[in-house]
Amino acid sequence: MDTDLRGLFFPLNVVLFFFIPSSQISIFMTHLSNYGNDRLGLYTFRNLVKFLQTWTNLRLQTLAPVQLAQRYFQIFPEERDPIWQDPCEDKRHKDIWSKEKTCDRFPKLLIIGPQKTGTTALYLFLGMHPDLTSNYPSKETFEEIQFFNGHNYHRGIDWYMEYFPLPSNTSSDYYFEKSANYFDSEVAARRAAALLPKAKIITILINPADRAYSWYQHQRAHGDSVALKYTFHDVITAGRNAPIKLRVLQNRCLVPGWYATHLGRWLNHYHLSQILVLDGQVLRTEPFALMDKIQKFLGLTNTLNYHKILAFDPKKGFWCQLLDGGKTKCLGKSKGRRYPEMDTDSRTFLREHYRDHNIELSRLLYKMGQPLPSWLREELIHTR
Ligand code: A3P
Image (tube, rainbow, N blue to C red; front, top):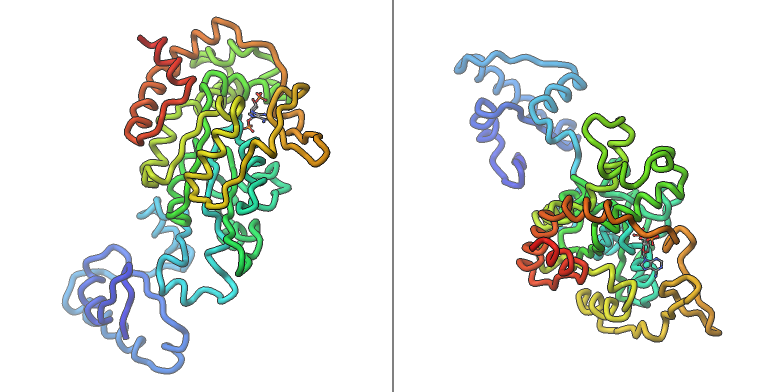
């Protein structure tokens, strides 16, 4: 009888008599048939206990299963949160997975956000490509699955896979999903890399000051009482002693714009060649150039000419999907809202607030061999 210790196989007696006295906790799992069909396991464990009592001064104690689990997680708090790994990365895992399941039902591309940078437009444009298939919309979270960042993660990978169609044998399916708050989540990058280590990652960035302002306007439009009560300048400049609700709104406005910190986290888990950083300004003005860049990055051979399927809608003020008959289909009124320009004091305050973050972002992009977005070049001029 062998045992599997973090991927290594040792004869059971070596494990029992060597590892148990030297490890804080040992967990043994066995197939039921091993117990049912022979008594070697029980015999070995009985003798192990005898051995420990005779030859060591260890005092053996036991607890009820739930208390044992609680004790375990006290010792290893970082293991409280499960981490789903790609079942197809390890042959042994794949072999015991249901035959009906396939890793082809996982996305190969994640659009990670952040929010308010044009992620919905990008998601719509990508979905127009015949070789790209987006996730089914989630009723719960405004279309986005939001698997890797929050409580949905604990629903497991079967839950996640249900958001993607069963792959067909013939087509070269390329699934993707977009959840805009993956970008600044503390946990999403680590979790995504464990399940989708080969995925490509796209982030789209606009000037973080404009992102903060767009987010504030979004909150106002959704009737957020704090955003309605306070001006944008009040929100971004609120001090330590400001009401907690104001501080929370302030954080949600400002923190996603610390781009270098968040991108750095993704770079800790993915190789830089797997991550593409896009300029949200270009998406607004020249979406074709951007879509060509993405198709190249994804290695799509069937290149779609977006000139033919996008049209600028003067009423909306944005690029929209061109329908048969020359009409356009634009994103709803919650995207591309009209609101007053940001006041100069807020702009100056945010320029200073994001200064070091922007400098650090330019360093990261240089390291990644990716061009600086136009808005970043402009911001850097002001830092001199
Ligand atoms: P505003 O509504 O503040 O103008 P997201 O989808 O990530 O939440 O981003 C929303 C932002 O996408 C909008 O912010 C808008 O400026 C930008 N955007 C870029 N291209 C767009 C398009 N073709 N249609 C609508 N909005 C677009």
